[in-house]
Image: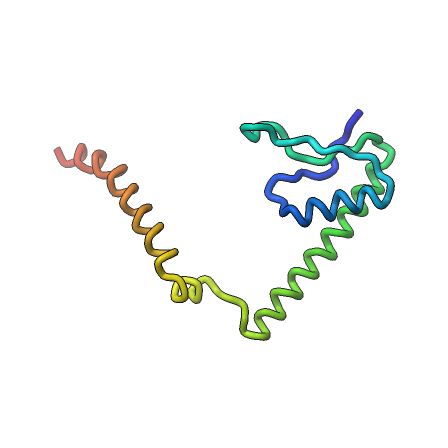
Length: 122
């Protein structure tokens, strides 16, 4: 019976490719299930052989630890070099990309809530 090894929802393409390559290089038989047209199904990697589960899980866990350390190192290097952009810096560098969506959200909320506020007054 197939066993779920790795969910691919919200996983970047490069990470998914790395996991698939890792499993292939270690001769672990797996298949990928698509999420479907409406993304109702589970987009994931499944093992064909339950006996390989512990090996596959260990490989994936080691990969994810290495990947997270690598990403943390990249972010720290950007911070040290002054290239890392904070949220406040993004607002100041690209104010239109922040304030236009914010105005749209406030506009929608205003017209969504106003009828209920008027009912309470009358």
